[in-house]
Length: 63
Figure 1 (cartoon, rainbow, N blue to C red):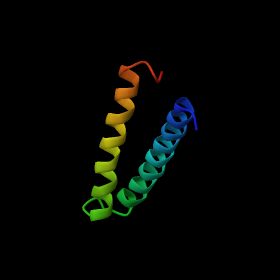
Figure 2: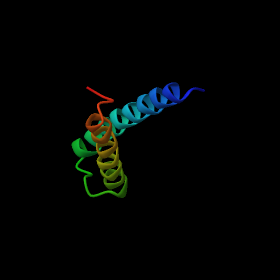
Figure 3: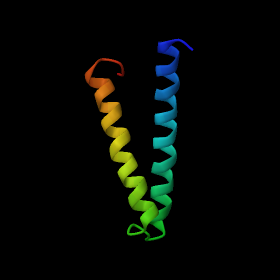
């Protein structure tokens, strides 16, 4: 796989996982389960995904 193809695949995976975890967080929040380990793990992952996507934006790789 070429480097740019690998980047595009990784980016799509990160975006897809971030969206999935965001929807799961919303479900947990609706069930008043913000203090669960699962919710906190999703929250931590969300911060990591945001950092990665922000870094891509900084280097002009994302809009």
